[in-house]
View 1 (spheres, protein in one colour):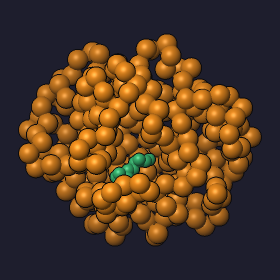
View 2 (view 1 turned 180 degrees about the horizontal axis):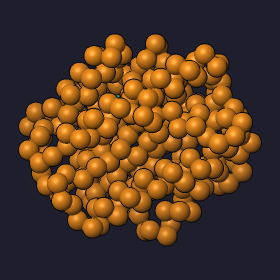
View 3 (view 1 turned 90 degrees about the vertical axis):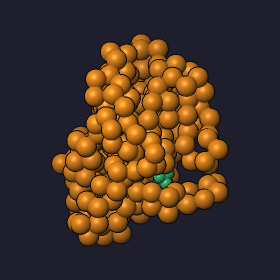
Length: 255
Ligand code: MF3
Ligand code: CO
């Protein structure tokens, strides 16, 4: 069931989204060779708690998961696609690319956001992958108008990515968000225009393309959380929580 948010809820989500974007950008500024993925997690969690909010992913257990997620920030390095678990021994090195994915609960409502950044100097291929994924999110958002359908979002992303020969991850997708981290509808990053649920004002959704340098295929690690590319080539991920309005889509996860 798709939950339409009230104006009061939207106001809270707007504030939560702003806080989330602030924390994620501050955390991204810390990314540098020599820092551990655990330190990034600790820093992000500290900022969220300082503001009186709650890290939404900590102990979150989505349907089908065998264990609760053990951290606040998902840190996915290189061939890790999403849901990488922060670790004191995982030290970032120049040339790595790292996806930071964070959820925040503000006054009981949730927002969700992810960005991918390079560590030190990275290859031009990595930069291109990051930039294409960022653009894919922008294009997905650009068609998120009331009256359009869920399939229009995936279709726009797929048509754009096709020119770049990157693999679009199919087993993971965007989603409704707000009362919970994951709500209906499921929002794939590929699909047919004009299909699926209709977008209406008051819907709040997370759009999150995950693009791979090579194959679209991914595998779940033995830790039960981390998805990695099947060919171990790099992957990038961007995500915004957005509001469907009468006019332009509104990005809630922005400063
Ligand atoms: N942004 C992530 C997603 O939509 C949320 C991950 S929840 C976690 O899949 F528990 F895995 F961290
Ligand atoms: Co998400």
